Length: 239
Image (cartoon, rainbow, N blue to C red; front, side, top):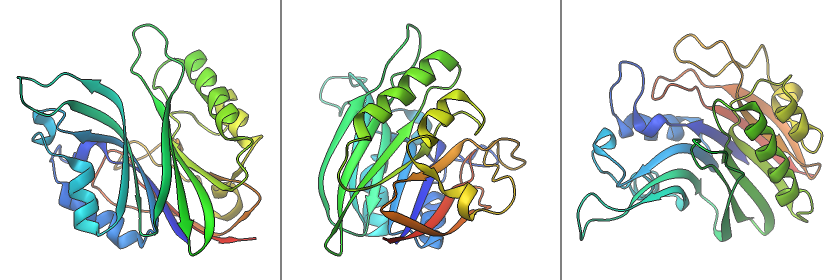
């Protein structure tokens, strides 16, 4: 099973160009069976041409999808779709169930969430969780990490947590998560694994973390320019 985590920056990559096809080509080239995306727009704003990005990507890639709107705003005018922004799971396998849980929020911050998709991988259940932790507030981010642990720690299925954690591996919030799940990059990645900012990244803030039922066999940062983050790919077998 090949997986991907990718903060797509609502389709805007190097050069400030909006190009959702470039995002799709990046996911396609990765060979991902399951992908967790962050910063996805759904009829959100002119910045993404008011596109329903989840549906467009799912149709383009011929994958199943579940979208979680962590921002859900009134439309710009009556009769228009609601403006939504959040996380997206794409899967070549059936998505059996899903839920989105809003994470702790401090005043003045942007709402974040944890999207869980229960996926049937050829008869084996996988709990695939996708998140995007807050950017600037370390205390808020630590609260969010603790909430993620509470939500997922008792999951009976093999669990894969992916996302943009906005924190480096030595941070308290990442250590909170890696105390519960193994860091795939540390096991199978080569080099520092920096992912942001593109094109000259200086931080590793995008992760794939897994439970003991999953055995990683490879991990790589993909040097593509479809976003301000590089995506992280990995492959796993079930133990």
